[in-house]
Structures are given as C-alpha cells and as structure tokens.
Length: 351
Image (cartoon, rainbow, N blue to C red):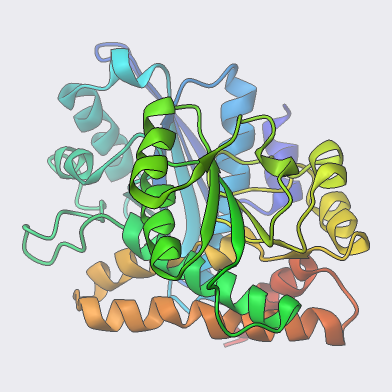
C-alpha cells in the first residue's frame, strides 16, 4: 500500500507509526480530520495478517470516526489506532504504558479509547503515561465506563428507526433478527432485543458466546458462514468489518441491515449501491454505532450519564432523517450520510 497516496485519497491529516522493541509494541495511529476537534477513536489490538491489512483498517476506521462524530453532532475529529500482534501473548501493562507514551507524543491531536480487545482496565493502564485517554471506569472520578452498553442502545434505536421506515412497524416485538457477533456490544444488544420481544438467530467464532445467547435469550445458533443467509426481518452485523460484499449481499434474505460493526461494506460505493438495488435498507455503520463515542465524549466534557443516554437515543431521529434524505436525493443511505457529514464539516471550516 502506498501510504501517502492512500492518505491523500481518503483525506487523512496524519499517520504515525510506533515501535518499542522492549515490549514488542508495533502500533499505528491515524488522524483523519480535526476540523471539529481532537481526533477521538479507540485502539484496536489485533493480530493482522499483514502490515498492509493493519494500515488499511486504521485508515478506514479513522475516516469513519470523522463522520461518526460529525453526524452525531460532537465537537470531535476522527482518529483511530491499532496495535499489531497476538493480544494473548503481547498485551502486558508495560506494552500498554509504552502505547500511552506514543499517544502522548501526538500532543493531544489524538485521544485514545477502547476498541476490540481493549477494555476500561487497559485505558487505566494507558493513562499512566498519557493524559489523552478516555473511557475510564465509572469508579474513577469522571469516568464514563464501558461504552459497549451505549453502543448497543444506539444500535437498538437505529434498528427501531429502520423497522419503522422500511416495515412501517412501531414495535420490534415478534420480529426475527439474525445477529452476527456476540462480543461485548453484541451481548448487550441481544439482551435489549430480547426485552423487546425479538426472536434471535446468532453466530460467533466463540461457541461459549453463542451458547450463552441460547441459554439466556432462547437464541437459535447458526454457523458463522450461514448467518447472513438466514431469512429474517433484520440482519445485524456486530463483528469485524467488510462482511457486506457482492457475495454476501446477493445471498441476504432480509429487508434491513442494521448492526454495530464498523466498516461493514467491503467497497463502499459499489456495495452500498448493490444493497439499494436489492431494496435492502442499510443503516450506515458510523451513524448507528455512534453510541459509544457519544458516551466517551461526555466523559471529556464532564460526565453525566442521563445526558449521554439522551443523546444516544437521538440516533433514532438522526437515522430517520437520513433515510428521508436518501429518498429525497435519490441516493444510497451511505451517500446521504457522507453528504450530511460533509455539510457539517464544510460549515465548520467556513467559520
């Protein structure tokens, strides 16, 4: 991958690479846009198949964070970081503190938070060596705690908006939702959907996670490579990205796709149009899954859980407006959401 040309194409301001041989740390921090404020985005610890794969992921994720924060109305820019390697072998307090020093060197342009394989306890360790870390436990003064429940709440509200728009239903009761991914967000989402009377089909790499869903919520367990083919009312991708591609989209048997995963489309324009051509309503990932970043933002401005929750519930109205915008402008929901974000960024730059 040609780094500078990729940055230019995607509009990034900065990409920084870090190495600490003493701890085995290999990390990338990408700052996409700081028009609205410092670039906030979680740190993902993942054993990528290659450095190119890690770079591709952090570039896409950081760009998504710009639009996530903009459309959510937050005074934040978009950034993301990845730590490369086997989390079970490499994640130690020393490595996390080394990563914190890397974040500190960014001088406040980037604020890190939780993401895949990184929890609130890791943010505490990282904060030993940087002031630019958010998502601390609620037991700590001003901490907002685990963002996963807030992400799940936002996704629930987004699903409700999509169901109302596409199916004309005011309630989720009795609907069938096929959910891929039973991780931190997926588990919270499953609980919320169960409370709403939803019938669940689930899949995950972890058999323990799916068995928990089956035991607690009566979910039907489906093989991972079959979940997208389940005939249901909603397909909810809540795991890794790029799950929506020509092969999987052609096999979908749902009128709605709405889930928590980032970067769901393998190729944005092509796959967004393919969903539209199949009359499948897609809730753009960076809009529907903004609940976590909204909650972390409230930690930065002075945490108030009630205020945070109220703003997360607002995702329902944001998506309602977005769906109407896409219809009015005869474009995909992806294009409508990008336009919405670009309008907000342009207005801020014009001030």
